[in-house]
Length: 268
Length: 176
Image (cartoon, rainbow over all chains, first blue to last red; front, side):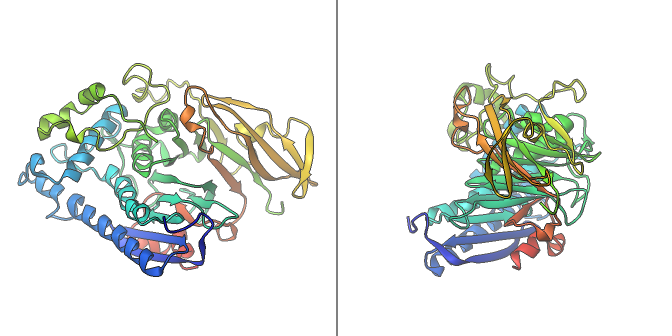
């Protein structure tokens, strides 16, 4: 390990990198040589790009696209593709079919996009851990994984976007060594379907999941969103995972271990 | 850490994938699955509720813009003020039972009666889901503040596109 827990830079190193049709934001606070952090950051972005090349349905040459055109057998796919499809099968089963990699309008093709991003970001974060970095934030398109803390005095503070009020937030969550993922319709319109009936999921406008792993926080956010109002309760059945949803009517739903601090007046 | 499921039940779960891929069990445990707290007999504990309306909800509901708090904060004003901190009195909330264990919060109430700070006094520990002991209960600290006035390191929200990023709160934070 390179850094003692208290050893942080005065000014963190910040990186932005466009990938997967969105933006990756990385902040590292460790007081280690810049070259160490640059190398780790480059590995993070390279991993994300590798995964995008394998999985993107927007790329005709991705393995998923080739599988869907019948040009590639699953058996011949990269090990990562098999790992993801295996996990998706488990998620589909455990969500009672609410999550599905088969779009209702095109049941002949597979699209694991609802699972891949969180898994990819967690996997890419492995480069930061492998470099011995202890205090960092990695966010990709609204999914976040954090480690350590930005300073000795405070933890990471993750704001949750208000899905019904552009530019506003629902509140802030303090986190260390945890992940946050949000599924919703605010940015891209209805695009999550309920695999049980093939219809667009419309009961919620956003579902945020907090938990130890971004792979599963993101997966549960997607599946729980598809489930509708029962989504937060379902998410909370998994150890250490907690959910916060905003319904289409604008109400907050939380799993029972999720604490809401009351709204204080601005003058307080 | 998520606990891998038993190999036998896993095999049943991924059978469709195996039929497709023809691969052996080498991949089965490649990715740890989270364990369900209520998973007592195989799959039933984690299977999704089929009916959206037949509700035995344990979730709490509160309006987004209202002045009321949650199940936790609602209890915060029900007991006696103790140690003064911040700019007011520290009020210990009553213990709330969750399936993970007891949660207790303490609120700081300022002179004009508004709650200006809350912290968790007691978080779930032990019991059936012992693995939660080292993890904090997430607290959403809601503030009636404009986003630009709030302190935070970044934003979780529904996936934005590269274009939408430019207008996002995250972009504002990254540019700081």
